[in-house]
Amino acid sequence: MKVTTANDYAELSQLASASILSSVRANPSLFFCAATGGSPTGMYAEMAKHAADFTQMRVMKMDEWGIIPSEHPDSCESYLHKHLLGPLAIPETRYFGFDTNMADTDSECLRMQGVIAQEGPFDICILGLGKNGHIAFNEPAAFLNAKFHKATLAESTIQHDPALSQGAEPAFGLCVGMEEILQSKKIIFLVTGNGKEAAFNQIMTKQITTDCPASFLWLHPNVECYTTVSL
Ligand SMILES: O=C1O[C@H](COP(=O)(O)O)[C@@H](O)[C@H](O)[C@H]1O
Image 1 (cartoon, rainbow, N blue to C red):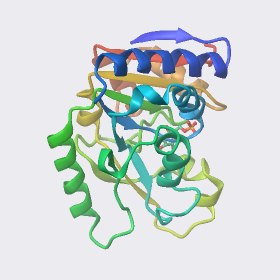
Image 2 (image 1 turned 120 degrees about the horizontal axis):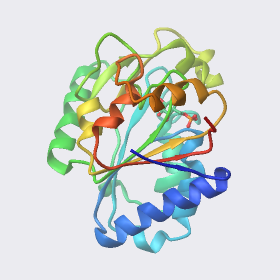
Image 3 (image 1 turned 90 degrees about the horizontal axis):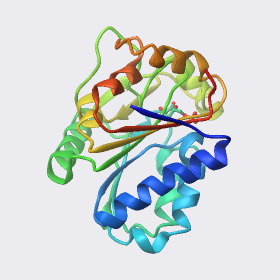
Image 4 (image 1 turned 90 degrees about the vertical axis):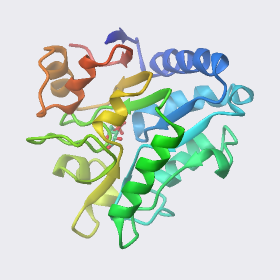
């Protein structure tokens, strides 16, 4: 993992965007796994300044909350339309989303595994860091899931979004699995925001443990970590 400490969030966003731009110029139809949350918002805004470079990029949603409808303003779906798909004019034909509110979520997980098998592996995977060390909704646990799956959310993950913390139980999410993340050709790992110090310190010990799913990124040969968190 190559760790670059940025002076501030604006610089982090510019550095990460520049790396993506160089990749998409070399491979215009690259397959992009898109995280949501506060960490990538500035980076997506930087990418939008170069929308003409993204006319062929394929995008897949990385994760989604299971207790709010896709059209809810706090859904990952709404976030991606607002910050990435709209500004970059990515049409539905090049976007691979999924629905968390269907009766048979197992079938939806299998469908997304099929999409990854057909379109993948990801050329670029964007990751933020959960305060508890999660990546996507791969939460600390005795074991991690390799494939796209239905995830039980940690309390700290639910509390991360005020709309969700008021929502109905049970809380769950659907998300890409660890193998699918680790098979990405390049990973852009954004570590920024309040409350990330403990998890980032744990990662920097280089001890790989399911207690901190992000620590598995040490097994990947091409992770660019951009951070504003001081150790
Ligand atoms: O809960 C989550 O949090 C992380 C980090 O969110 P951020 O708002 O601090 O960027 C996010 O990357 C992840 O996809 C989501 O599951």
